[in-house]
Length: 168
Image (cartoon, rainbow, N blue to C red; front, top):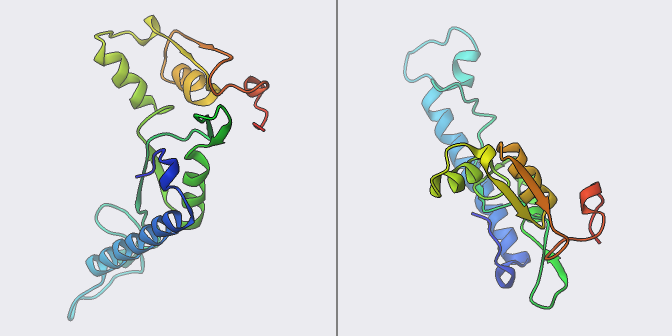
């Protein structure tokens, strides 16, 4: 689980997460191989019989679970300066381990739908999002079917964010 914990995010913790994901991936791969390899005097008709489980997951394609609170690349810290958000760390773990993060916060579709449902609104087009993050707030809301989104130029907003320019 990756969230925003600035005082705990340092090389040792990131490397610990990296190693854990690799270990989980190896354990899952071993478990899948044990389920599909023939036992005793069973015969195998073709190679595809031992490369996948009943669920169709290839033992070479096993993915460890990586859950992310959100993918924000930056935020405005208590010193009013921009600081790294968890997005870059999540991308690094995905790239180095082959894991795909499941995002449970913004900009996930499920996050927006759960928020709308929690206030008793059935039609998402009746809701607008106001936020300072082009991807997490504005695009996430529009992708979830909200009626609109307003980008405010406060908080973590940096001039050019709406044009897709890199921050900094």
